[in-house]
Structures are given as C-alpha cells and as structure tokens.
Image (tube, rainbow, N blue to C red):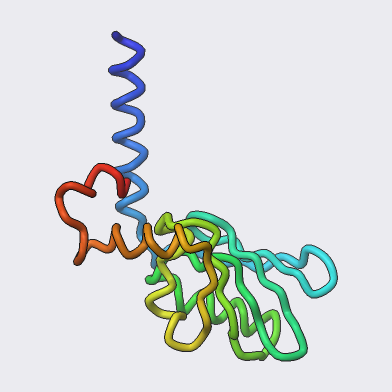
Length: 134
C-alpha cells in the first residue's frame, strides 16, 4: 500500500511539473544525425527532420508555444518550406504544434492517431472519454 501511495504521489508530481513547463526557458537545439536527417530537442518528445530538395518533413512537432523556436531551428538547418508533419502518436508533446504548423503543412498520421486527436480535443471531449484521453 505504501509503495502504491508513493508511486501515485510521484506520478502526480511529475504530471504537475510537466503541465507547468515555462516554455520561454526552453531551448530548441538541432543535431545532425546523418546526411539530410536532423533531430531537434526541446521539451517533450524529440523532433525528427528530413531535408529534401522540395522542402522539410518533420516527425512530431512538440508543443504549440515552442513553434517559433522550432521554426527558427528548422531555418537554421535549411531555409526551405515545411511540407509535411508526421505524427507518431496523439500525445501533446508530439502533436501540440499541429495547430500552428498544420495550416502550412500536410499532417500525416495513422487513422487511429487522427481519431484519438479528434476525440481528445478539449473542446470536443465528452465526459465519457475523459479517462481514455490521458
């Protein structure tokens, strides 16, 4: 019982700390992986970047408040248009930037990712889905 209580407290603290991230202090750094492939590190999941002759493809896009920093890091890699965003799954640290980058780039994801994003949108989330969207 004590282990369960301790685990619960630790998890709640981690979730609370993550929810209170001060994005103004986050630095988005680019690292060359190989050839035309790069990785951006910021807050949350990493972003994969592929540079092609016709523009950029990114794998995930972190959080919306980091969009300007992500855009600056992309420009530092290549001064090309963002064409595609590939969402690996529906968590906010992988899809939060969709709202910013979506109007300028095509978002690609598995049908289940799209369905989960639609279900778990705060504006659309009915109470019965509240537990499934965490």
